[in-house]
Image 1 (cartoon, one colour):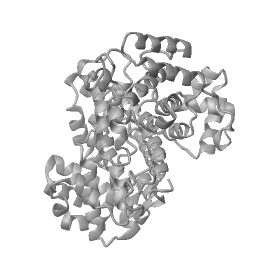
Image 2 (tube, one colour; image 1 turned 90 degrees about the vertical axis):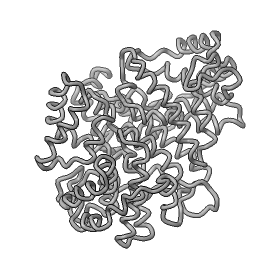
Image 3 (cartoon, helix red, strand yellow; image 1 turned 45 degrees about the vertical axis):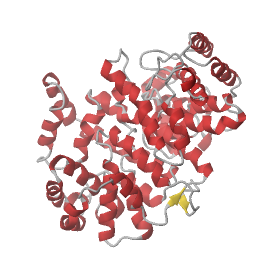
Image 4 (cartoon, helix red, strand yellow; image 1 turned 180 degrees about the horizontal axis):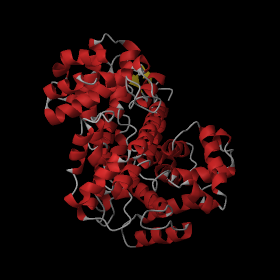
Length: 513
């Protein structure tokens, strides 16, 4: 992202956007809102005590702020494997050293205590047997986090540090098994800061410092010794951690030019859509419809709002998005809150503030049957009405855990019924249907030299299909499917399914088919 650079006077700050997004990634990790900005303050404070300045300190700042930016990469897989919300286990995983036996038993006790007694033995067994599977989760999380940092305009130092968030000083981490100084200082500081804030939240600053003093084999003996000297001061509460974290960004501040806002919005939309394999590519598909359905002067607002309309999904456990049966009352409440979370995040940053109300209203209905405010009639903005129609239509043409996708013709009938019954705006519905009918298929070559067949395979792979399932769907042999997947990884530079899905979304390979 070319304009995520210093200068530009009063142009919007990149840090404002990323600090706001950290509030939903905190929730996606099962942590309290504000943990990322607190960790950012600790990291920058420690970096300054170590004498870091300039670009190196900036790398520490953004690595800490984005420490959870890969949180959607494997959320659905984690929830499915452990049969518990990923947000239940993640706070415990963050601070547990799995390389030694002394911490595994307390981890299992703490984890199983969070589920009903009848499910505890099964969860303990699945956790104990997941070491190798967990390494794959870490690899995918690192790969997605590094890719997102690049798309957000941050340089190789931040990308490398995020890719190393599960490495260790003693070489027992992953995905690359680096050791000693190869485990970069920005990465180690960010990991230490995240652990310190989490441990302090549960046991207090003194206990956090004492625990981290013992983690020299994980984070480096010199680093933990330095933190042991000033750790309690670094963890001291501030009046307003969020504003303090914004003020702590090393100068010169990174600024955003207007063209960068589209790239930023697209990246954040893809991040949200990674939450479930059923959602991959959804936000881009809605944006394409909304942009072409809007009046010429409104197209920028329509496109950007659509790209980030589901940002709040990150805060909601994947189990809910992947549920095939009816939702409970509490599940429905969590779903309703995703529009609220999106609105609140966007309202915090100047670059995206004009999108906030539109996004917050995208599930409102003219008859008051929507959420999260049950707004009616004229209270629902025209831009929100258009976004709602585009969202409903595109969602109907995609598969969901509880139904197959509808044909374009059937979706059009259902959308018109929503307008007749007073829920959706008839003018917005007609504009969306016109845009859907005029949609053109891709005529340019596929990116990275992908063949038509490889794109077909990539679409299935991105949505979680195994090689065998891909083979059955495309009527090819499993070995041929495996070869296609290998070629896709080689051509795209990806090594995990979530990263390949992110690549497919970025290049528009999951829409328009």
